[in-house]
Image (tube, rainbow, N blue to C red; front, side, top):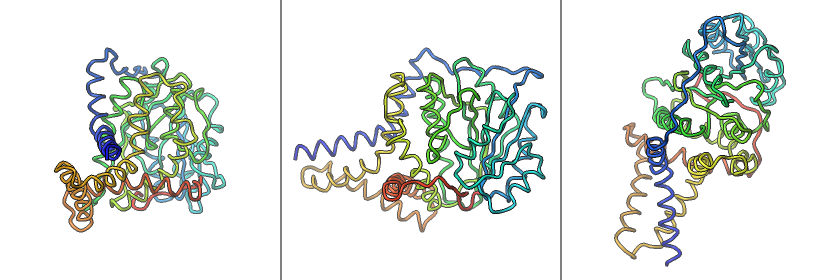
Length: 381
């Protein structure tokens, strides 16, 4: 029984640390640290560097015109901003509408995946561009967003900067992704202050062109860029003043499907892409990667170990009966969330399904690999 008790308590401790302990660690660490968040460099009017903004697009005819128009409305000189729409095998009128909307270049590529479309756009970018920015086709940036991102990249030693994304939803939406992202943005602000972020987001980010790296086409930039930049001696920062918004998947079930697909792209990065290798990590960043990323991706296994060991320990004390009741309560609340759209039940359902998506993504990757191709999630356009 001693071994089973160790499994139970270790699993419980790691789950609590993943959800509550790590944020508490960052809060205390940031209070005690002498390092303060770097202020972006103010870019004087008339001294803006040349920038290329890349929009990778697959079947985006319904939103691409608005996206290009939004970019044209940014607070940046038009003659120093190049817009490239990289159409990744789009079978619709995405390319035609992007040209009509005023994109400087529209690349019509064979369907090879988002990453390869982004690589092609970087290769085709204006040679004068020293910064390459990236955005999703359904995102909308605030006018100052690009200036804030580029200002972060002017800080010495910074190679990557991602902004703040907020998710919008229609009335009656059951997805709780907005709540998760507000929490995640808080974590990234502390990570950025102390060292570098452990992940970005596809809606709004930028890199110094001379620091751009090409990664495996199944490994998206969101997870692979920050740690790879750190390994190469650059910092990867979070710029909260660079704001964007996106329409989120309307249902929790749809979010499960989206995260399952995302995790099938994340697992190659974890297992063979170098994320878990400590080589090149400063000690502080290694703590963040293992505490935040590696431990979070282990939560499905930890929940299973906790549940199985809990069953075996019934009768060994009332604490184990209480622990089992709490786990069954969480599962019951998640089940009720499918029928009763009450906020606490929806949060429980979101947690259970998104945790399950981590395991489902691993299953998909191990069973048949991860295709490089992609498609917009249902309900986000």
